[in-house]
Length: 542
Ligand code: C2E
Ligand code: CA
Ligand code: CA
Image (tube, rainbow, N blue to C red; front, side, top):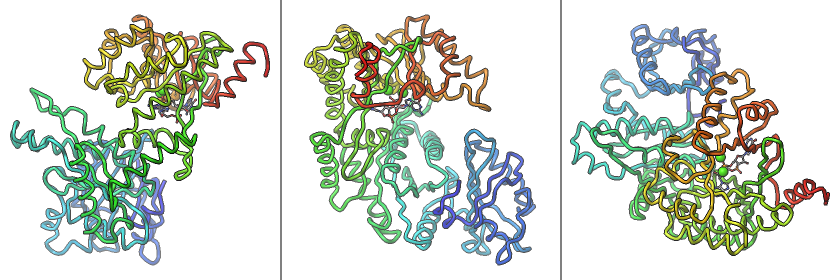
């Protein structure tokens, strides 16, 4: 649970239960507390606090349940030390992980004033002074790669001018909360001033950093409740990485800022990674994808779908990239990058054509076999999306009624009118739609009744809870049953994905679920492997 990076940057990592009973202390924490001869760390974290700060600490930890941060005094070797504590609620267990930095060295006699100087009153986040200290400490700690992301809100000035400063302030506080929920315990979040924030991320994997950035874009895109109307904002992000893009604090920040301007100039609400020549970097990933398609680095796998009697009825096409440069990349990671570089329509079109072509071959062995294809919101919003789908289907010569497009709830929430028109036009041609990852977004079944959708796919997070003690709960089963019953009441079929256990299968069967997809019955596999399954089904073993 502790990474070497964290251990070098932080003075202590302590995990506690809701009563602050200590469950774990990092080796660095024991050293920090005990000096040369590690003294026993007390059983309760409150015991190390200065008695005058216990109440303040309790209040801080109760304020926001998911995460909190505060500066407090501790008594160590009979001396008063200042620490900065950031606590994060751990999922599933009722415990907090607390990251502790000893800040005594930069607290002088006027420590109260210093505290104010290092924190932002409005959001409670650390500020520029803290950022500089943290980044310099990371650099000093060794040659560890980390990234600095500079975030600048788009449209904040307008909100401030239209609704006034009080609303502007509320938006900044809400932004801080949203960002805090996205960052991991490894990361640091700072308000630089105005509507600018900075994150320091310790994941050396650029794709992982990119996926955090995508989550930030989504978090900020949610409406801000500035009653009586909602406000909509975006965020332009620039990322620079140590040591490639700067070996000191000011160079790193300057280059993150340059990358951020690249995002602003490129149309805002996007992420740019610093590159000496940003254009050439953009071009190189674009050409890697173009070449990758030509060279066969991209391919599809197919995960079989079964009816409730375990008869094979269809498959979902899943994209794969085995890149010469980056190795095997998971779709969750490369799809956001492809979307960002504007190549999703291109790659999506390729996937659709490839899946339809393969479907034709599967149908020679089993007429009526159904193919589900994932569609990204970006693709769906494109002007020529419907003609592209119709072309792929007619080119392959398959019946449109055997193609299902999987769209997510976020696709539906984007420009509703245009989405509804596109859905209606394709439905008229007998193409079907399924709502992927159902239950994880914001749409309601009531809204779905208005749309020409034919099935929902219950997200695997719901299925996982079944037969998984202690998570297995009557409540989860009730929820799934309710989803199935409601869907059936408005004539929607229900697909369950991520089915891994017999127990899950039998529960879904008894609840009336229509189709099953998951490792229990079949992992994603090559077209050849599906062909063998179809041959077996047809009784002509290959
Ligand atoms: P998804 O559409 O929800 O796809 C289902 C994912 O669940 C697949 O992950 C599949 O391998 C995984 N899965 C299936 N059964 C099980 C199971 O029993 N247990 C567990 N733990 N996982 C299971 P994969 O292939 O990594 O794909 C991830 C996501 O990438 C997909 O999620 C989809 O959103 C996206 N994606 C994949 N192919 C395409 C594509 O062609 N176009 C677009 N736009 N997105 C795609
Ligand atoms: Ca899917
Ligand atoms: Ca899904």
